[in-house]
Length: 165
Image 1 (tube, one colour):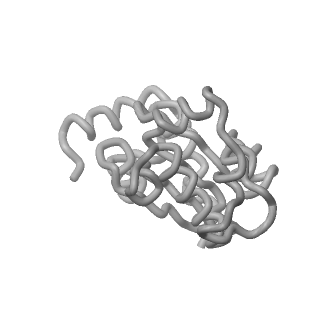
Image 2: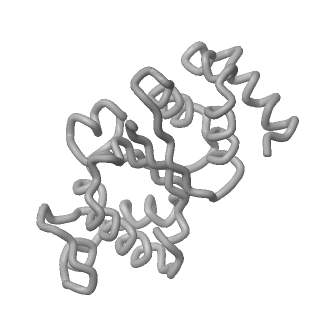
């Protein structure tokens, strides 16, 4: 999975950026980096506190070539991840999502700028995934399918779900 070019790029990034220096010795994070950068495979990145999840996210935001947005279920989590809340980005109501009901992504239209962002999106990072209800994931899926005009799960967007064990 980890080709010579990818490994060389990763080593270079580690040598010039101290925030990801520890990742060079962590095979799991190197593999996650490779998956995120070179595939469209969705990933669940988990681990105990101090295992490098936040460091990985910061390095990804700084060095990834992919167009991404970082969302989280609460305001505090969104601020900590330097992102926005799920409800804010997807313009979702606070009520539970019921598939087929006229609500959330169906009830509110996205602005032209938001549509441009959603359609150009390569990667959606959801931090604190353990705090995200199943119906909220269904709402994200419905919004991305609708606004990207794609029947693929999550509109064909790669997901990186980050959370604690």
